[in-house]
Image (cartoon, rainbow, N blue to C red; front, top):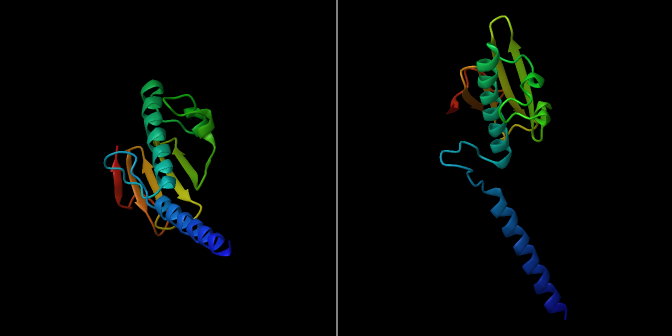
Length: 144
């Protein structure tokens, strides 16, 4: 009976280890997906939705939105997306009203290889940095 219990425990440990390692491998969400993890995929999805909403907002109003609340109900940007806490990321949005420009940065709560920082502006190019907060000089990961 002890031998059977030991084997059962050993098999359980091996199965848990296999499941954990299988979850560690990121599965791309679409062809050309630049994300390295599910957290990055969510952050990049938020940025793409935000950038599309800004384009639609400018087309309708003649200028970019100056707050995320202004974007609510524009395109796919929902009222829930106004919150700056996006799970593993914090949204930093800066509007430059006098120039009709903006910057958005997705800053991970923990910066590592699976949680890069992302940046974009009214040009729509998404840039990333894995060592510090991304900015306009960071490498482009995806152009919209």
